[in-house]
Amino acid sequence: MPSLLRIAAIGVMLVAYPLASSAQVPQSALGTWKLNVAKSQYSPGPAPKSQITLIESVPDGGTKMSVDSVDAAGKSIHNEITTMFDGKEAEWKGAAAPTTRAYSRIDDRTFQWVERINGTVGVSGRSTISADGKTRTNVATGTGVDGKPVKNTTVLERQ
Image (cartoon, rainbow, N blue to C red; front, side, top):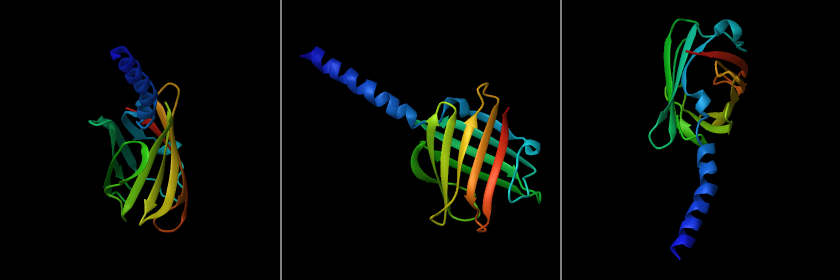
């Protein structure tokens, strides 16, 4: 009988493990990323002067993203979010209006998000890490907090 329980426990683990790992950030995304403004496109502009993103694992299987930017006017902005990459909304701290984002993993090099501003879907995006792990490209489309259409392609380089 104990061996039957052991076999059942192993079976549950084999089924549950892929589900748990699929809710986590792709490991290739972890680290520090610097925006390459020259290779990025912002519509509408203007582009920020600089941006550094830190993506790190936190206890409990979650991920914390911290984004430090300097906008076109020279103002420093800090945003951060802690998420499980499970498609559930989490607060995007530091946004100009109440904002949440729901992140989910696509595969080992790709994740996506949906942003809600004041409860309304604004921008959604997809982030893809290059095969060599040195570049991350974000494509974001939707409507900005000002109601204008957004279509941004940002290129970030691993530091």
